[in-house]
Every structure is written in C-alpha cells, then in structure tokens.
Length: 316
Image 1 (cartoon, helix red, strand yellow):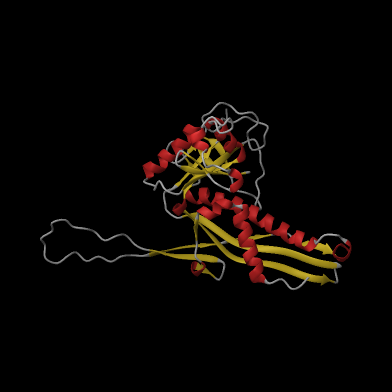
Image 2: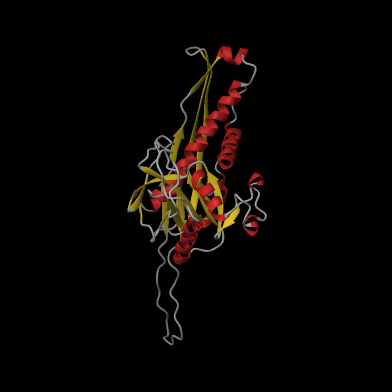
C-alpha cells in the first residue's frame, strides 16, 4: 500500500464523522481560522450593545467602552488502539484487510466523538438539570425493559414531553427555526407510537417524511432524529449527566436514557487535527501497524443552557 496522504485521510474522517453522526450537519461549525494549531479554539465574542436614549435633549452623549471577550477551550483527543495487519494476511487474504482496518478506525473514532459531543452539550451547559425549569422528564406509561441496560422499566416518551421541551425553549426566547431533537432509538419509537406514525394514523404528520431518504420528521416544531444512544443521566430529582468512558458508556440500570433538543445556533462543533499513524513492514511485529487520532470538541454557545433542553427518562 502506498504512503497514506494525510490530507485525504482528514477529508475521509471528516466525511465519515458527519455520515455516522448526521446531527453534526445541523450544529454550528467552528471555522478552521478559529482553531489554533489544530488543538484549541479561540473565538472572539463582541461585547454588549450600546445603550439607546429616547428624546434625550442633553448635549454630549455618554461615552462608553465596549469590552470584547474571547471564548477559548482545548479540544479533546481521541486515539484508537494500534492494529497489526500480519504480513501473511496482506498476502493471503482475498479482501483488502488494510482498507477494512482503516474503516474500522474511522468508525470507532466517529462513535466516540459523537458520544462525547452530547456529553459536552449537557455537561458544559450545567451538571444538573431541573425538570420543568431547564429540562423535561418522560411521563408516559411504564415501558418494558426500556432502560439503558434493558432489564428495567422507565416511563415512556410522549408527544406532550416533546411539546414541553418546545415550551421551555420558547420561554428562553429561542428562535423557532432550526430546532432539532436527537432521540435514542428506544425513545424515538416510543414517540412514533405515541403520535400514530407506526399505524399510519396521522397522515398529515407523516406527509413528506421518508426515513430512507433522510427526510426528517417534524414534530412539535422539532426536526426529529434517531441515534442508537444519545446521552445518559441518573434520576435524582435533578438529573445529572453521566460521562462516557473511553468514548463509550458502561450501561447500568441506575442510568436513564436522555434525548437532547437544541437550536442549531446554540451549539458548536470543532474538528482539529486528524491523523492516521502507519508503520509499514515492522521487523519486530512481522506486519504493518495502524492507529488514528482525532482532536475534536464542542460546547453550548450561550450561557444559561440557552437553546438546549434535554429529555430524561425517569423510573416507573
């Protein structure tokens, strides 16, 4: 195999990140001009608007100074464990194992970055979320084995819960355009059943919706998307977000699934350095070794959880 072109690899990884995490198409991207050395983000923020007077007859206006700030944060780095392709595999296998390994590296990085992105949205916005104030909890009937570990019951998601999330956003003054709801699979299908899409009962709601073509279902003002898992919380009256470990979650029955509603301008995603490491024809390991690294990050753009409303499962 020829020497890997890092620029091509970066483009491939960036494409796969979006393909495997489609919600990233709908969040605010950080310009490469604001990413320093591929490792940190610096974004200038304009200060407060000037004051306005009405019918002021005073000669000589009050002079003020605008204080601008800079939003800065370091990107997290994600690294795959090195994978060895034995020389005999390269010679004897009937398929291109190198290409398969590279695809696996990309998929692993995509999954980890996607998992952490939702955690950044919730943990950076506030470690605790209060139902009715800045979060929503499910209120449907008890599901069957719908907890993260699939051995306990949680209250199911209802249409009213999604409407409550929209109400909280509107109360914050969040624009009504470009609102999205990313739901874990179990909550997504609970919502579908609740609004009658499964039985084709609500023809107006499903008009124009085609999941195979990637058209998003619009419910209660949200473009609804599905992901196998989104985020996890613990139900304690106030909902605390659980952090992934090494890019994945260890699912236990003390956790609850969480979906996230957001307005596209309220969250941002930054992609920094992307690199594939390659050791060809290692004399020590009798083959070629591959690993990958991605630097990425994200955050709520505004303070006070503006534009982000999580929906947490609660115990039945």
